[in-house]
Every structure is written in structure tokens, then in C-alpha cells.
Length: 137
Image (cartoon, rainbow, N blue to C red; front, side):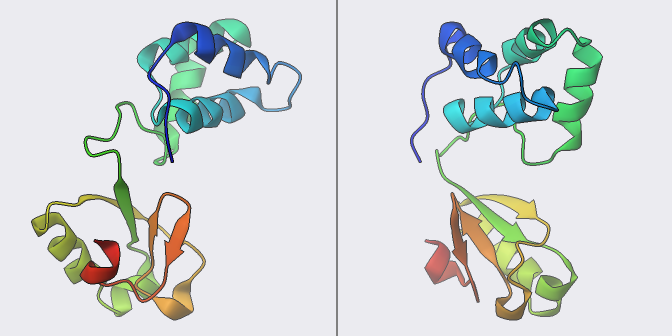
């Protein structure tokens, strides 16, 4: 997945397309993250202003959802590894430790809906079942 460099004008266009949507704050935050790879602090103010809600409301939504990030990925490629119960039962914690030691940018996720093939991981939109360090590399 390729992201655009943060640009206020592009962000305004992305957000404006959601003016008539129900629940536009979360949708706009997700769209900004999809476009730039993260949600710049300026986007919080822009969304609040665009949808006439408080900055606190936008920030509350932003901080509630763990998938929304406030800074770009250092490597441009984050590996999400499921840490829910089914994946814990098949060794996700040791996979997480090994991935971190191997220098991968790792983020814990919770249930990718692939419990029968745990531990599960995601790189971008690609779901990986029975994930191993070799598959993640």
C-alpha cells in the first residue's frame, strides 16, 4: 500500500467527501489514515471544524480505535499479529517476540477472524494464517 505525504489540501478533499455520511468522524479518520498511513494532528482539528463537533469528540474517537495511528510507520510496513485468546493458545506471543527481535515493526491486533489458522497476522490487507517469522519476512 502506498501512502501520500501529508498535505492539508488533500486532507480537506478527503474529509469533504464525507459531509453527508452518517457518523462522518470515524469514516473521515479512517479515510485520512488510508490516504496518508496515519492521522496527522492537523486532521483532528480539520475534522472537528468540518463536521461541527468538538476537537475532544474527534480525539476521543481517534484514541479509542487502536488501528488509527498518530505517526507514520517507521519502515512503511507494519506487521499486525493477532494476540487474542485463540492465537495465544498457539504461540502468538513467541511469534511477536521473534518478529520484534528480527527488526520487524510489530503491532498487536485482536481477532482477524482466522482463529482456526492461528497465529494469524496481517501485512497491509493480506491475511496470513499459521504465521511464522519466515512468512512475515
